Amino acid sequence: MTKRRPDTTGYTVERARALLAEAGVRIADEVRVGPAPEQCEGGRRFVIRQRDRDGGTVELTVAGEWRCPTARGE
Image: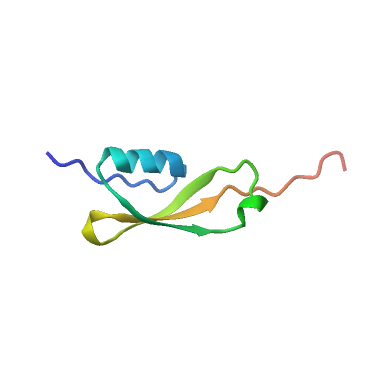
């Protein structure tokens, strides 16, 4: 029985990689969008899009977590 290809949209990149590997799906490419890594707080990266590619592979579009600092005590 073939495992269904998981939709990893919304997962962290690390979790998405693990889910896809478990299902036997190879990642063809990871496209990074959004702020530069040094502008992202916390360093977490999330899958915001998953596209099917040739040969049963997928392309992941990844964005880093970004939050505006809030004013404190002003």
